[in-house]
Image 1 (cartoon, rainbow, N blue to C red):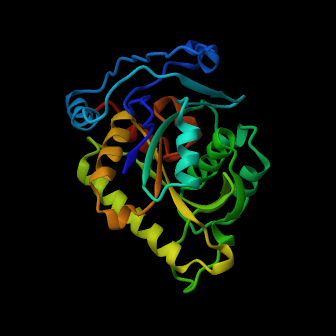
Image 2: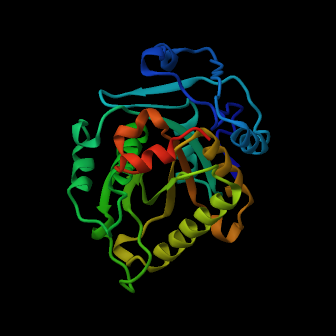
Length: 283
């Protein structure tokens, strides 16, 4: 299994980014490696969990690409689009990549792509995950030029009661299914057991939906897009995915996007303010 980027340029999932006003716009154009060192204020349990996983990944200098939009900012290693393209076009191995999303706006006030609004106004299979799914596509579209094919209820399965994938796209010339989930903890610290349970549930669903999707809607592989409320959670998800059964991993691409308390207005994890306070409370 590959943990991107394997070209000598790795960004630790636990590294958080400064406020938008602190972003250096020259980062995305610089030819020189940029070392990002952001102090983490998490408490002991989080630090221990982070250390257990991030110690597996060598920290090296890395150029950072900043994708600026009127309503949000996304940061990822310079090599990430190339690694993702290689995984989509050529690789039969699973892949994990990490990026960071920040926005202070509610989704209703964002200037989104037409396809994102199409998703926003389309019926889904239920639940309170609309914002996370719409912003998942918006991120894939802005950062990697994904084009929407089918929304959740437009994808057909046999049997109809099958597990479902959230949407499908064309990405680097391939038909890709995308399943979206959120990794957070309402109280306490997100653990390896939490990650194991989440990944097993979502990866099993990916396998079932891929087996049961009708032929004319079939995809070449799937992306599991995980929104993480904290950097240490991204570390744990990446670490646990490496250890999970290969029969569940298959060739799934896992994109982990850290969207912390500074993006709570986007309602990626919940629109309930009391629950949001529990998710983003100091641990």
